Image (tube, rainbow, N blue to C red; front, side):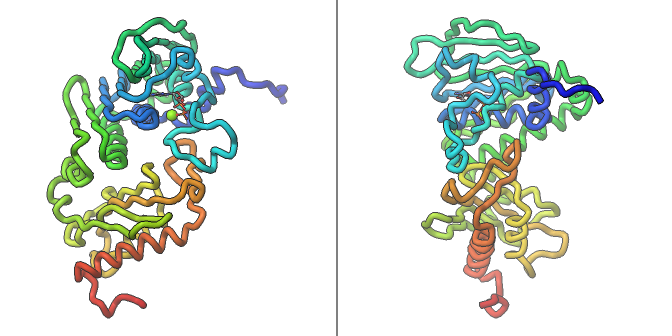
Length: 339
Ligand code: ADP
Ligand code: MG
C-alpha cells in the first residue's frame, strides 16, 4: 500500500469542482445566485458556444471590496456565514464559499467589481491556478465575471459536454428557475450575441409564465395562498384541462430557492387525483415559505434538495391548499372530498 499523503490544493479544488460544476449551466447557476445575494436588480448573461467558450455575468449588486477580490476566489471563503450556527439560519442562496474557487479551478476567470461607494473598481484574473495581482478597473458599480474555456484543464469533463444546443437548453432552464424565483429581477440572456431572453423587472410571475411556457398556460392558472403564517404556500396551479405529458412544469421553491422534492411533487399530483388521465401531469408553480431554521438547505453540494424539519406538515399544506382551490373552482365533486 502506498503511504497516505495530503492532496495538493489544486487537486482538492478539482475534486470540489467536480461536485458542483458539471456543465456551463452549473457555472451560470452559481454566478446568478451570487448576484442575487449581492442584491442585484439586473443581471445580464452572455454565452458563447453554449457557455463552453465564454460565460459572462454582469450585475448591479453591492460589489466586492478591492481587498476581498482575491479572497472571493479562494476556497471556503464567504461573506455569508461566520459561525456554524449560521448554517441553521440560512437566508442567502450561497454559504459554502466554494463556487468561485471551484469555477476558477476549471476555467479561466476574470473577476471585476466595484462597490457603489467606491470611485473605481478592481480586477483579478485566475488562469490555471495562477492569480494575477489586483489592478484598477473602471466599470459601473456591481460585479462582472467572465469564465472562459470551461474544463480546458479537465479533458474528461469536457468530453462529457453535450451539443451547444443541449448546453444552452440547460442554461435556459437555470435562468427560468431563477427568473421564477425572483419575479422582480431584470434578467437578460444572450447566446453568440443573439438575444434569447429579456425579462424586465416589471414582468411579474404571470408574465414570466407566459414568456417561458406560453399564454395558454398563464390563462389556465388558479392562484394559491394558504394565508399568512410561519408556514405558507403561495403560487399557482393550472386547470386540469391544461395538463402535460411530463412533470417539467412542476416548479417548487422554498424561501426563494428552487428545489427538487419527490414528496411534494407527489402531493401536487395527488391533489389532482381523478382529474387527470393516467400518465398526465399537473402544472404547478409552488412557493413554500418556512422559517429558515425549519429547513436544511445544506443537504446537497448544489443545494437542489432540501430537508424540512416537519415534512408531513409541508406535504399536507401543499395537498390541502391545492385541493381547497380545485374545490372552489368546482373541479372536484363535493362528495369525493374526504373529511
Ligand atoms: P458563497 O456564495 O457560498 O459565499 P462563492 O464562492 O460563490 O461563495 O463567492 C465567494 C464570495 O464572493 C461571496 O461570499 C461574496 O462575498 C463574493 N461574491 C461573489 N460573487 C459576487 C457578486 N456577484 N457580487 C458581490 N459579491 C460577490
Ligand atoms: Mg456563491
